[in-house]
Image (cartoon, rainbow, N blue to C red):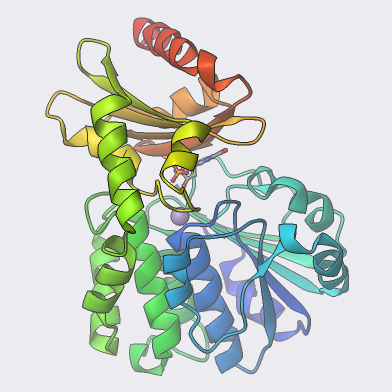
Amino acid sequence: MRTLKNAEQLWSVIGSSTHIVIIGHVNPDGDAIGSISAMYHFLKQIGKHATAMVPNRFPDFLSCLNPDGEPVLIYRNDPEACNNIIAEADLIVCLDMSGPGRIDEMADAIIPASARKILIDHHLNPVTEAFDIVISDTEVSSTCELLLSLILDSPAISGDISLVSLECATSVAAGILTDTNNFANSIFPSTLEIFSLLLKRGIDRDYLYNEIFCSYSATRMELMGHLLSEKMTIIQNGTVAFIILDKADKEKFSFRTGDSEGFVNLPLKIREVRMSALLTEDDGFVKVSLRSKGTLDVNSFAREYCNGGGHRNASGGRLYIDISETAAYFTSSIEEYFKKA
Ligand code: 5GP
Ligand code: MN
């Protein structure tokens, strides 16, 4: 689906704005931080200052982005100061989020804000009522890829990648690398074309690969081994695997935000497994991460059983149940889902 509704208005709206806030989704990943950072640097290049903000902390390895930029504000660290910035904004650019439901309590400040609102996103079924301009394209790897194609079409760049700053290009590359899991999924012809342009521009792919995929702590590696050997359950005749990460294990392995990034992909390396889930105990809910192979649709499973959504092969959601009930709930949900299918 391509709804490039009002894409042509994007740069004129940005051109007429002075107090710009750029935001991304809760538990920000490489695509959220990458697209925020890319937008920040591009706006700086065209003479616009912007404030970047996300609802909560993001993994340390993403600090490699935004090298000379201002730090991204964490809403939860100082809601009052962030609310003031949001209230004064005349433009809010929302990146890599399918709607206000993806920014938790920050939505209470964003939705009523008088600023014009732009959504740039690549998720299925975006919730768009709150936005003045919606640029939604699901036929791309990532928001970063979509954003760079928009930037290339902007009057300042006019298709000339050499005019894109290295900071902007590096941030875009980080989002593509993380959302495609180092080119393992969500690859479209445009993805490789855009990445080729980034390489021509001189991004350091080896550096990014090491920062994103080879920067584990020893305890994170140990947690991974523990979860695979002790906490992985395979059900549905060997086709579905789930891993439970509870608070006790988090504590035992000195868990830090981002430490479980990528774990959900591991069971998919088993030949017969077509769907994988990581169920993580959080404060007041269980965070669900879902991945699948081929045509198996985890987006519909996430919507129906996990209060969530996402993409066909990568989705997520939340369960408002105790971690001790999670295995039974997940197993019975899977049985019901596959019976219906
Ligand atoms: P992850 O497993 O990496 O946290 O999330 C994978 C994808 O699932 C995200 O890119 C996002 O599209 C979607 N997703 C994750 N959590 C939620 C959620 O709570 N609600 C919705 N609607 N989508 C989610
Ligand atoms: Mn994304």
